[in-house]
Structure formats: C-alpha cells, structure tokens
Amino acid sequence: MPPQYSHLAGVEFDPEVIARYDGSGPRYTSYPTADRFIEGPIVAQYVTALHKRQDARSGAALSLYVHLPFCDTVCYYCACNKIATKDRGRADVYLDYLELEIALIRAEFSAAPKVTQLHLGGGTPTFLTNAQLSRLMQMLKQAFAFTLDAECSIEIDPRKLNDGTLELLADHGFNRMSIGVQDLDPAVQKAVNRLQPAELTQTVLEKGRALGFSSINLDLIYGLPKQSVSTMQATLSTVLTWRPERIALYSYAHLPERFMPQRRIANADIPSATEKLAMLKLAVTTLLAAGYVYIGMDHFALPEDDLAIALEHGTLQRNFQGYSTQADCDLIALGVSAISRIGDTYSQNHRVLLDYYKALDEKQLPLAKGLVMTRDDEIRRAAIHDLLCQSTLNIPSFERAWGMNFTTYFTHDLAQLQKLECDGLVEVTEDSINITPRGRFLARIVAMRFDRYLREAKSITKFSRVI
Image (cartoon, rainbow, N blue to C red):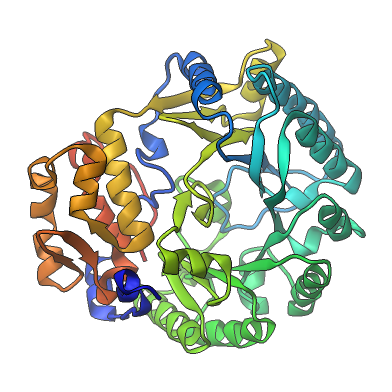
C-alpha cells in the first residue's frame, strides 16, 4: 500500500465510541442528498446538461443504471422502491416505457454515448423473463455504445432465477453480480418473508463463477428480527466458505412509519441496540480475520478485488450504488424513481409508476425533481467524497483544485470537528484531515460536519441509523 494511504490499512472497532455517536444520517451516495432535490424546470436543466456533456465531454466515461421495480414477493425489511406482483406481463409494459425513455435520451446525442458501466437494480431484476432481459439489453445496446471492457453488474435473487438466465447475462457481457443473502437462519428468514436455503445461494454463486463473473458480492444485514450474535456467527461461517469477492454488511433501518412492509415485523422481535452492536462487532472482526479489507461504511472486499485495489491506489469512488472503482463519471439512470447525475445536475424520475408512464405518454422525459449544484455544493461534495473514499483530505491540494482558502471557507465545519478530534476519530493538521482507524466506522459522522444542508435544515429528514 502506498505510504500516503498506509493509514487505511488499520481499522479499530471501539463499541463505546460507536454507541455514543450512533445516530441518523445520510449515506452520501450523492451530495446534496436526494431529499434536497426540488421541483422545477428539471427537464430543461437535464437536457442542457446532456448537451454540455456532448459538447465538452463526449468521449468521457458514462455509467448507466436501470431500475426494475418488480418483485415476486415482498421482503419485509426492504426499503427499496418496488412493486410486488406475480404478473410478468407488467414487465412487458414497463419495458415499452423504458424504450420510450431511452429514445428520448438518445435523441439528445448526435452519436451513441460510450458506456463503461451498467448496473441493473430493483426491485428484483431477475423478475424479468429471459426474453424480457434480452429485449432490455438489445434496447440499451442499440442506443448506447458499450466498451469491450464495460463493467456490467446485476442484483440477483437466487429464489427468482429462471433456467438459462445466468448464461444469458454472461453472453451479454455481465461480469459482476450482487446476491441478496441477509441471514441464513430459517427463523430470521421467516420473520422477514425471505426463505432462501444456503444451498440455493451457493449454487448460484458457483454457477456465476463458472460462467466468468469475476466479482460476486453478497449482501448481509444485521439488526433483523429474530437475529442474534449466534445466527450472525452461523451465517458468517457458511458465507466465508464461499469466499465471495465482496461483502456488503448493512444495518437494518426499522422505519415502519415510512415503509409499509416493515409494519409486518413485530417490534418485540427487533434486537436491542446492544445486541445489534455485538453483531456488528462480531461480523467486522470475523471478516477482517478472514482476510477481507474494510473498504468503508458497510463494504468489505478481498485484497485482490478491484474495490480493494482502488482503495489502495486512492482512486475509490462513491455513487448511487455505493462504492465504485469507476472514475467519477456521469450517470444516466432509467426507470421509475431513478436518479441521474450529468455534470453539475441531479435529476430524479417520478417515484410513482403511473406518473412515470404519464410523462412518457406525453413524450416528455419522466423527471419529477432535481438540483443544479452551486459552487458551494461542488466544493462540499468533493470534501465529503475524499473523506468517505480515502479517509483523508489533503488541504493544500484541495485549495489548489478549488482556488480557495480551506480554513477560512470551512471555519464553522472545522470547529465541528473538534469534539471528534478529542475522541480520537479524526486528526486535523495544517495540511490534512485524517479519519483515524478508530473513526473509520463513523466516517458518515465526520462527513456530516461538512453538510451545510444538515446544519441549516429547518426540518429534520428521517435518515437511517449510522450503525
């Protein structure tokens, strides 16, 4: 690991400090965060941003995201924008409208934009039949120019995987997959309405590897109903025999007032804060002992994985899908509720399916709200990015990049770091801000000190818990 990033080699789990600082806060997959987006002339702003990109950055890397909202069954813990149905015909209608959206976007470009990254998310992308998946990929490849080495990833539900789907995906160039696991204990699975035998998950993982998927991520969640340290230990013991390249360890956010399916979870079944913290400690120590690298927030990877290599080289990025190896690039997002970022513009599609359809029926881009970043937004976004991706911010380099005096500009923010510094979470010098090994699990807390919207908020948005 290069000397300038040697501080990333260590991470210290301090339960007392973590419990003291645990609270609610943004995940910073964007800054400003999506709750700050506003209604207004979003379509015009988005089209202007596309034209600016074509004029100035036509050859730059572009990422695509497609939101496929349908699920066969509802997992009670889920907070995604999804639609539960067993009618596969609804996906045909949805693809009709995706085709309209793709055509509207492609019409803004004189030549097919070059795509270096694709992600299919949901919902459950594998809800689609093989014919529907083939149709989707044909639509995308007709409108966009995929590079030969494009990173193509998809979220997989092993319970809803048709015969031949993995082979089809491999033929279309998919090389990464993310498999939802959460917990392998049958009682926990029953409590969240997701019965998924370990053997089924293992079969999908092994088949994916045999087909050439070079990086497989498994999603785990701690804090689920009926979950305990013992169920977490058993799950980890099995998962580590599979040796996935990446593991995402998410905290369950119980917000039944916001997410209706969570109302089916009995409050009495939710682990206590103490038990939840013990689960996290067990998971972290187990994964580190097994040789995984702590990437940041809730991500771990094997040292040879691209994500760990990006961390080592100081090129790690963060976008709407979490941590990424791709250089910071524009994102065109398709489908209901999807969020695009082109240049300094964020644009979000309608969250309600009928509103999304209605806009496209009127031959309009289906945008509901968004934001054009101010210079202050961009400066703070860069600061938060450095802290979350590299655990350090080099002040002289930052000042040169933005033509400003860091100490003067961030006077209030630096004052907010003093308590964190006293507790050993950060080290602040004339030349840098470093998140210490003790503070890496609380990086969101550090980033929040640079969030002007949080500081000036007239009302408090309900965010997930940090831990």
